[in-house]
Amino acid sequence: MTSNKCFLQVLKGKSTDRVPFWYMRQAGRYLPEYMERRKSAGSFLDLCFSPDFAVEVTLQPLRRYHMDAAILFSDILVVPQALGQHLEFRQGEGPVLTPVDTADKIDLLGMGNFHRHLAPVYETVNRLKIQIPQETALIGFAGAPWTVATYMIQGHGSPDQAVTRSMAFQQEAVFQKLIDLLIKATSEYLLKQIEKGAEVIQLFDTWAGNLPDDQFRKWVIEPTRQIILNIRQNHPDIPIIGFPKGAGCRYPEYIRATGVSAVSIDTTMPLEWVRDHIQPLCPVQGNLDPLLLVAGGDPLEKRVLEILDCLSGGAFIFNLGHGIVPQTPPENVARVSEIIREYQK
Ligand code: CP3
Image (cartoon, rainbow, N blue to C red; front, side, top):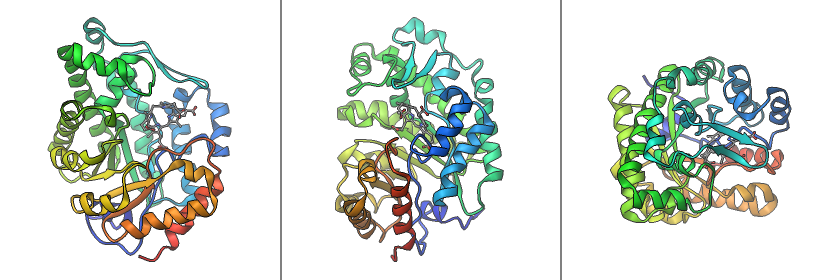
């Protein structure tokens, strides 16, 4: 089936007369209407598992900025929770999980209750498919196994993922077992999202950059390759965007070896290098620094134009290099959206 949605056209390598855009973490705490809804919803996880609320907050940023894509409102950590791991989001602290750091604890996880637990997320996708504007594409997502495993093993976020990197070295067979479970769970989770109406998938591998090259191949490339293979067996044409944040000069190897349709590039990637070494391989999405979106003014506008000038000659989707942060003024997001919409290729 062909679609004339601008975002999908670019992902299929077709030329378009304007640059499509969306922003990672486009729904969330920088929007007063999100904070208002969140007050009445209880915890963040209650919000993720209430289709009424999740649909509403997915649509909120579209009403303001008319992005070319909506991304399902959920979190990458609902997958470990659905596998049986305890998860909480504490105010000001981020996610807290009961660490799964031994073979015995990994053995207690399983898929017995997996799809039942995630049913409200599937219902959200189903409703969004009907409710989003017809020119907007719907993105489903999951965390990639490496990044999700870092939270599962350490029990919280960390700047260097030291506990998980150590486990991958010291107890490789045990770690592999967890990664294999995540490959299976993530593949099934994404297949369900596609069945319910997701038109594009994004795989978030936020902590891909902290691994040496052999480990990058083992824990980032190989699990991603397997998930993509599993998805493509049933849906050969679904666009899959990979985000191996921090992969640097390993982006081209990641693209060739995993079979992703497109990549999201992080803030550190030099634009000319992306144009010369990544864009010839696949469509590219990125990479404005989310902190420049906080700063605003001339430096922001200048950089948005630099990115557009350098990358809009090839297949390009404007996005950030990482997610929007809560202190972002909504009017800066409006200004950037206006510049992109008015930009003449
Ligand atoms: O708008 C969107 O992009 C869709 C929703 C989305 C959320 N999380 C909602 C969220 C997506 C795609 C994610 C992905 C996610 N979650 C990642 C990968 C991308 C990235 O940003 O690196 C990671 C590592 C997580 C795990 C996670 N969730 C952390 C570390 C935190 C705490 C930090 C923070 O920003 O609060 C979360 C919480 C979270 N996920 C919030 C939202 C809207 C904030 C919760 C709140 O309202 O208090």
